[in-house]
Image (tube, rainbow, N blue to C red; front, side, top):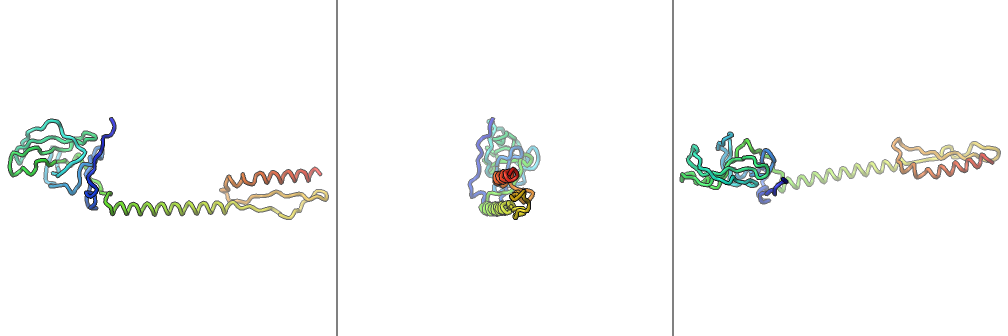
Length: 210
């Protein structure tokens, strides 16, 4: 089965740089924000837990159950990650004690099944990331341009012994055209002058025959 659609909070919810994102420990789906934590003094079946105001990317079990807890009796429904179905905690459907009614509609998520990550979605963070990427791109282009110029400078050549010193009879012998390049001489440079070198050899052969 493929990935399910993932939801996110409104953009303004991510603006504060000190806001952390609470995600599923198993599949990393976004679940909540640290700014939505109402209390960190709760305990679930696996240990420490948080009471949070809102949860996204979850699905509740189909059946609600009446449960006795330290603070009273509640009608709760277990909640799971909608992507991987990991149990996260529960949602309070009804509180039978008036003083606990503030919990209705709120969620308890257990630390064992979640983790927090830094918020990299704030405007300030996005601008800083954009500037950093631009600097990297500019530096990469500068290195590439410098490398291209260096390669062109290496593709130099000269004549060896430009004044003919060897002769056969009264006819001078034509010397070869010789390349002098760096060890990383470009392939295109070799191709560029190959035909010229062959023509000079033909002229040399004619001089020898005569």
